[in-house]
Every structure is written in C-alpha cells, then in structure tokens.
Image 1 (cartoon, chains in turn purple, blue):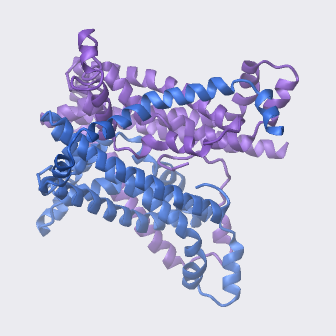
Image 2 (spheres, one colour):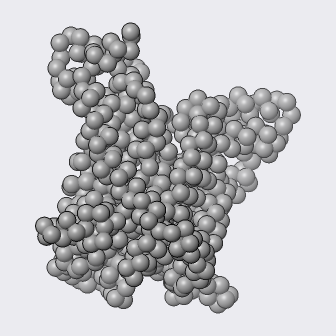
Image 3 (tube, rainbow over the protein chains, first blue to last red):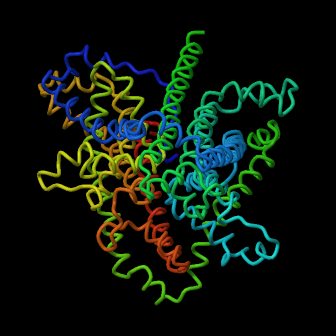
Length: 298
Length: 278
C-alpha cells in the first residue's frame, strides 16, 4: 500500500533502549545538534504556521472572532462542509469494508492490481480530481446536455462537491483495513460460520471487534480530509456564497477580500478540527497498542 | 480444491467484490478515463501546443523543481527529526511526535494563509528577512516553503518505524569491531534506512507535484515566474479552455502514474529489506 497518509501502527516503541546502550548512544553534543536542527525545522515549518492561525484569528479581539463565525455565509459554509463529510465518510466506510472483505477473505486473480487502483486517488492532484467530474457532468461534459434537459445540476452545485470529496477521501478507510484484515486471515470467521453463524453475525461479532480501532482510525483521517479538502472542491464548486461554499473555500474568499481576521477565524475552526483529529488519532493508536499487548499477555 | 472450499465457507464474495468494482469504476476509473478520452479528441499538434506553451513549460519547471528541492530538504531534516524522535528522550517528545502528522490533518488552504502571514514582509519570519533583502512570500521561494510544510510527515513517518525496529546488535557488532559512531551510522545504519528514506522522498515529491491549496496563497501566481501547473489547469478552466486544461491534466496524470509505479517498486524493495510494508 502506498503510504500517502498516516498508517495505523500498533507496535510498542522503546526509545530508552538506544540511550541505555553504549553502542547506540550518541555523544551528547551530537544529541543536542541533531535535536537542535530537527526541532528547529519542526518549529519553523510546522509549529509556527499552526500558532499563526490562532494569533491572526484573535488579532481583532474575541468579539470580531465570534462575529466572523456566526455570520450567515460562514454558517452555511460550515453546514455544507458537515454535509459533504456526512455523505462521503459513510460511503467510503462501506466501500472500505466491502473492499477489505473481498481482498482479505478470498483469493482471486488481479488482487494486487485492485489494491493499486484503490490507492490511485492519493496520487492524483486535487485539481485533476475536480476536473474529471467537470468533464463528465459539466455543461460541455459527457452527460452535460442530458443533465441540462432534466434540469439537474451537479457541477457548481452540492452533488459535485460531494463527489469531489468522495474521490479525494476514497482510499482512506480501505487502506487501513486491507493490510490488517489480510494479516488476520480468515480462520476466525470460518470457525464462526462452521459453527452456524450467519454472514452478518460473523461480521458483527467476529470481524468488527478485530478491526474496530483501525476502522476508527481510518474514519478519523477520512473525515479530516473530507472537511478540509480545497483543490478538488474548488474546481467543482463555482464559489457561490451561501450555496456552494465549504469552509476552506469560505476562508479563501474572505482572504482574497482582505478580510484577514475573518478568514483566520474560520481557518482556526479547521485548525481546531485538525488538532482534535491528531488527539483522537493518538488516542486510538494508544488504545489499539494496549489491546494488542493485552492480547499477548492473555 | 482447498481454494474452492474457502470460497464456499465464507459468504459475501460476490457482493463485496461486485460493490468494490462498481464503486471504484463509478467514482474513480470512469471519471479518470474522461481525461484521456477528451485528450484523444485533440489533434497531436493541438495537444503538443497546449502542453508545451512557454507559460506551461515555466510552470513545469517551477512545480517539479520546487517539489524536488522540497523533497530533498524534507529528506535531510526529516531524517534528523526521525532520528531525534526514536533515539533520544527529551521533554515534549510525544507531543512533537503527534504533531508531525499535522500537515495530513490541517486543510491546505489554512496552511496556505498561515504560511503567507508568516513569510509576508510584515510577518514573523518575513520581517526578520526583509532587512537582509530576502523575500519569500509571493515568489518561487514561497512555493518551496509551502511544499516543505505539506511534505514534512512523509520522510519522518517512513524512516521512523525502520529506526525503531533496528536491532541494537548491529551497532554493537560495529562498535566491537572498532567502528566509531559515525562509521557505524554510515556503514551499518544508513544503508538499512536507505529504502525507507527514498520511499519517503518519493512520496513527498509525488504529493508536492499535485499540491494546490497551500501553494496558491503564498506563491503570488505570477505567470512565467511563480505559477504552478495545477493552477494552470484552473486558469484554463476559468477561461473555458477545457481542452487545454485536460491536456495539461493528462500530462500530470501520466506523471502521477509513473510516480505511483516508482513508489510501488520502492515499497517492494522496502518489504524485501524489512519483511513488511512501511
């Protein structure tokens, strides 16, 4: 699987072992130099932008900050972002489960090729991801005249935004589940079925408890990308205020209108979402690691 | 015989594979094929003109040059950071470790405006550089800064697990044979890390080539100077030049597929080296 996103990892880490051993312990000046350079790089390129979002958002005070968030266009952008995520995450969840079930539990030719195809959306530029739907559903596209006759709008409307969001978040859940379910094999499910469990019962009682943390991990990352996608959604949105603006697009509009504090206020909500995502992700990894260790001890 | 029994024991093969293929085709494969079908309606001359006009070629140079440079910078500093996170204990290590994934979680538009605010001439870093005549925002250097941000986690996250799994015995053996720490790193540790490092580099490069959201705010988007290829596609679309936009998109797609192939080969090398995927 291509590692275009964070990958679920349940192994325990022991940092101390390297510092306790003379053969792997670096001189203290090396430690300070490596940490000094590495952490400066982290601070300048990663931490500073995060802090800047909140500093800029609050520059004009708390009142202006909250005013920017409850403004009608901002609220409608928040609603649309939530809607796009609420449709695309469950669809990609169902897809992820179906793909992982087929790939992990059965043998069929072309399996590796299928896995590569599932990863494909990660390597496509977001702008191209938006463009392909314009080519299919746009006015000059394949279905353009038919959609026009039936007065159905997909491009420059909500369905296009949802489609673009589904595309860019397509592999997230599948790619967490496939390697895990492949590693777990099919003995437990086969035992359940041979004892008379129905297919759905087997999935619910046997498979799901085994994959729940990886599943949750994939959902968290998928949701973060779904709510934050900019390039693909920008191509299909048409930027109609109050109608087809998601939160990231609203940030862009405010910024281009030189309403910097308002732009950063909406951006700070997205930055908070990113921080919550990282906290949940770290928690899920910790829980999963613990349950793996408990499983070993039993 | 054994295989056919497996197929019969567990239910849902037809349903799950069927759904997977239909969904994959509808969302990904058929729309992507539209790029190539649309391109095939152009004459070779029109296509060639669309993808090699001076403004487009200037955008390739910037996009690939800045992506390559950003991936190099991320490889060097990402390796240092991964080393620091796996080999040393220091206060705040777990917080730094958790925050490394921020560029995956932070929407690109947010990163773009935040970086612009920092590197603009009245920003935290921009105001320090301005007196020395160094300008970053609204110039090609700004593109580089944005691409460093979005590519940062790749090298750290591919190198880190390999460093963690590295048995101390190798370095003990090197030390007992008289190697100093640098020789032991250079001859023992680094060759082991190399496949993972190259994979991280390739992933960061591939991501940077297609990046749009974080770049357009800080780039200034001056034609021939600081205009990236994804922006060319958007500009052509806004001018209703669908064929031109699609032709450039086809070039980008072919390059993405080539990168995907390279990355898969690197990961196969990784898997052989470490016995698992990174």
